Length: 284
Picture 1 (cartoon, rainbow, N blue to C red):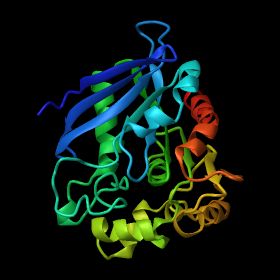
Picture 2: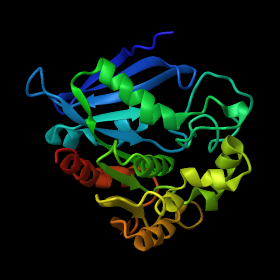
Picture 3: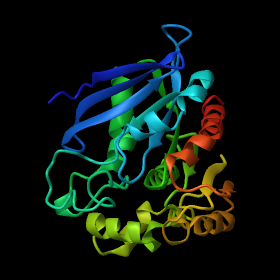
Picture 4: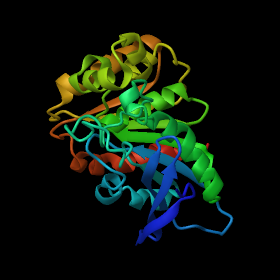
């Protein structure tokens, strides 16, 4: 069980490199893959700020790297991209692959409390284990200058992780995030199975609920949402989050994009804005 990451692949892109790594995660109890995009380095001692990208339901660590085109601006802005997987894998828990919106590729960036799903601890993996792994193995990455972003389930993860760890992240953004999971079918299914029936426990992983508890936010939260997204009104509920931010006086830039749906064509269209949003914040 190799805890130290080993390189699986390396592809040059925009003068930097997409590198995929594999390691054993003590947090999750299984082997995990993650990607890093390293921009071109001006010197051997240069340290890059980092943007963590959290992917959505049914994704792995590969979707964003292949589909988003984020590397172009990450290269020019000199910011590293770190992309973890979306759930534990290889544990063979009964029912883990029965549906696309729960179990495999659907970790919801929380720490499960129910015994059957005890290894689903993606919150601790992203917030604690992965930054420590980077610090110990990649001296060219400066994890003290970090932002977090994501799409759909990953947007939920980015917002909740940011709000609960304002000391660890300088910026946050999201594409079509699940901002009020306690009130949508995806969230209710996941939270019931991972966290149990006590809905007070669910609020710890709901961005709309967390805004009132962790409202010392000075940096603007950036969200892009497609207006043609078929999940907009029953799963994503951005106006619930917008109202919570207004009441808590938290700065939010919510941009509704006419004609855009939920897929990576939408992410790729506006990803440059998000990379620049984070690059500006982590360089301050």
